[in-house]
Length: 222
Length: 222
DNA sequence: TAGATTGTTAATCGATTAACAATC
DNA sequence: TAGATTGTTAATCGATTAACAATC
Image 1 (cartoon, rainbow over the protein chains, first blue to last red):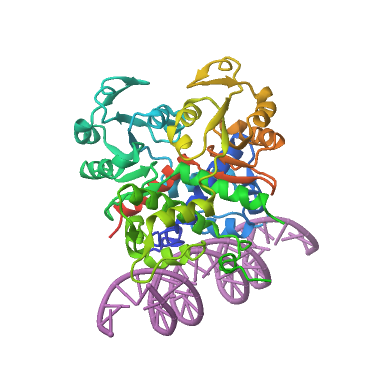
Image 2: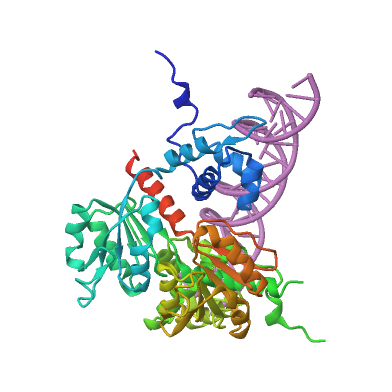
């Protein structure tokens, strides 16, 4: 029996805490950016400074992934990006569907950044019969009744919910029935999902309210 | 000298932690929803259940605001909503501008939910001269050079940055020069701002990546 | 009144930061 | 080599949860 040191380094069963994952996505974006700029090496201090963190947090976070820096020299940007891509699965493509063809849904369906980041939008749905059949970019808006079949046919893993909040839970339930693995909820309402389905909520209006609170805080500061 | 008990209850100078603020916005949305449904009273347990939290967290959070429930009965939804509105400043209108008239920018500028939530979009800007002069809803797309003047004329407090990531920092700097109080950053890049300006970052692609990671975790679970 | 629910204190849990030996 | 930076352990800090007296 030979040992397999490169696998043993970290136990992959220990899942990485959510706040760390959130930052790993930032490190990935930054590493790619540095790569494009032709910068080969980067130190934890520099990453920290660019992203508004401490170097300690950066090193601690990166210790979760299967990748090492070099003392005195820092991290190779290319290898860092590779390791983060692998850990996050950010190089694997996942087909997505947008539900809701209002302003926000349309924008998301057309957003080129999703395709670039391996999240191609393969279908758009809306409950309004007057929208069904119209086109968004290259896609036809489909009715809700054809959702289950299309989700399976197009092998869609993630549903982006951009409907009025009163319909959010119903839409989520339909997505789950249709075998979706993850839901990105852009409505203000909290959605409930079974343990087998992953959920991330964005809530732009909430973030604006948080921002407003911060603004008031700063303005009224000493 | 008379004491002022209703003011003394909580020291308003102790600012509320960010995770609590984020949840207060959820309580507010939920309280409004209950109000519309004609539900007068709600217990911390029910709020917790609806939002995926513990009742302990809900009570702890609500202890930060100037408002009390009633033992055995719970919280009056109307008064809860009022108190949260006051604490968050969510009943005060703040004019916003959208910078970037691409798909996302257009969607945000047209998003009726912002106006409803006291964040009317008063201006839209884009650096592309071919877009300047075109219309979005009732608004004319303006060039970046007229930004400072329009920001002041329209009394805009918050700028929503929806430009390509390479332009994000430059746009933020211009907004800050023009006297903006808060920035909502929708690009993937981290933006740096002085202490006098509040910043909230949304990063939809990052959230999709987090979601993808969660999906993989769940799928490969025991 | 009896029982349910609040408000708050104390305990636990987890995340961030500091510190430093290892090392290139 | 000397000095800088990593990886990791330990200390601190903060957030969440548990528990329970107060109370309606």
